[in-house]
Image 1 (spheres, rainbow, N blue to C red):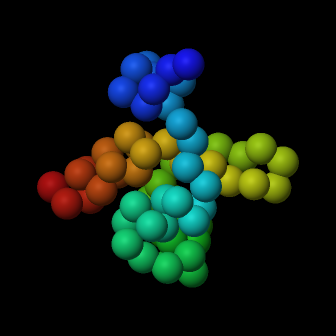
Image 2: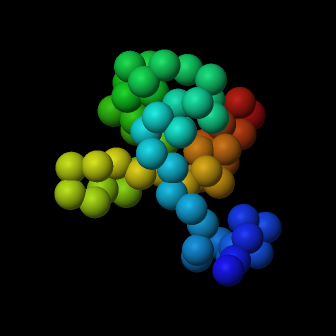
Length: 65
């Protein structure tokens, strides 16, 4: 069984909208607005949206520079 530390970039765990909003310490409505505005890349599986933690953190770094 692989641990979180052993995951490669290709195997990065996808976050749900709720987990991503918690990462940013914002509510779901605010996070939805950020996503709609194109601030964070996302992946769709059916109607569900998923996010990579590394891409969210990268987007924050780019916007703060």
